[in-house]
Length: 132
Image (tube, rainbow, N blue to C red; front, side, top):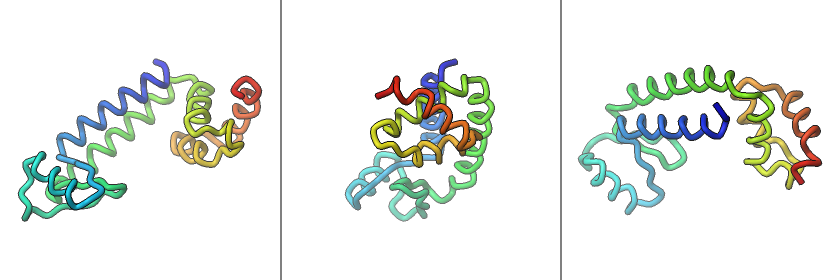
């Protein structure tokens, strides 16, 4: 499987989990109220913030954590099946590292996948001239 395909499948699985837990995003009081109504959540129900504008009913937090842990475990298994250089190069491009000359943001993501800084730097230097 190509890394782009894995990312797409991962996104679909996350969306499915969000839907199961009634996760919604809101960046204003108006959006918050609209999404409560859209999700069929009572205004008096306790709501928990998951950060970055995300919310869910507090009663769904344990289910949400379980689904996120399962997803993380699944993703860590699947990413090992993808070509290492392809993954690193995808994220270097995604974070525009070849324009900025800074791999910090990509490195943070890639380290969470189990790649080392040395591996990332190696691909960055090796593919750099071809990516500009």
